[in-house]
Amino acid sequence: MSIEQAKAVILVSGGLDSATTIAYAQSKHFLCHALSIDYGQRHISELNFARGLCGHFNVAEHKVIKVDLAALGGSALTDTSQQIPTEKSAGIPSTYVPARNTIMLSIALGWAEVLGAQDVFIGANAVDYSGYPDCRPEYIDAYERVANLATKAGVEGSGFRIHAPLIDLKKADIIKVGYKLGVDFSQTISCYQASPSGAACGICDSCRIRKEGFLEAEIDDPTVYV
Image 1 (cartoon, rainbow, N blue to C red):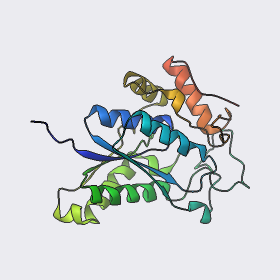
Image 2: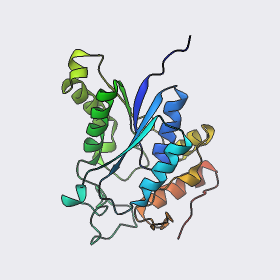
Image 3: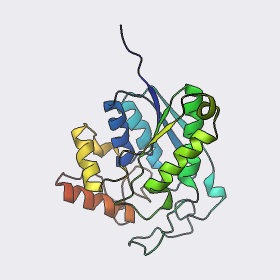
Image 4: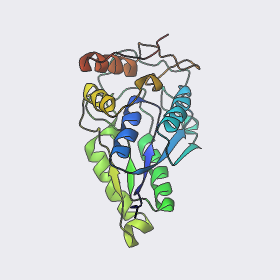
C-alpha cells in the first residue's frame, strides 16, 4: 500500500536558491506545488527559468500569479529609471522590494490552505544576501506565527510550517547542497538585470554573490554572462 505524499508549496523564482529549495523539498518526499510571482520585475526572464526548473523537477503543478508591485514603486527591481547597484550597499539596497516576501508568502499560504498542504518553502537566505529585512530567520519565525493565527487551517486544522532550509547557509554551501541534490545550475538565473534571453550582466550585486559562491564552492560556474 503506497503512502500518500505530503503536499508542499514552494516559492520558485528561477534562481539557484529556489532550485536548491525544490530539490531539498523533494528529497524530503514532499509533493511539490510550485508558485512563481510575476510582480513587475525588470528581470522578467527569471520566470522562464522558473518554468524550466519546474519542468525539470516534474512538480505536481506550477502556478505563475501576477501581482503588480511595480505600481507601488520603491525598488530598482521594478523601476527601470533607477540604476541597479553594482557594489555592496552599506544599508538596505535599492533592490529591496517593499513587502515582497510577505506578499509572496501570503499568496503561497493561501494556495497551501486550498491544497490542504501544511508546508510552505521559501529559498530565503540570511548569510550571503543583500541585506533584505524579509530574509532573516526572525522574520520567517514571525511569519509562521502569523500564518497560524490568520487562517482557518491554523485555527481549526493542523496549522502551517514555513520552511527556509537555506536560511543559515553561505552561498557556496547552498551551491554544494544543490550540486549533491542534482540541481543543474545552468538552468538558473540570479541576475537583477538579465537580458530577455537570460544572459546575466555579471556586475550587479546578485551576480557578484553568485560568482563568489561558485568560486568558494570550487564548482564551475555555468552561468551565461553578457
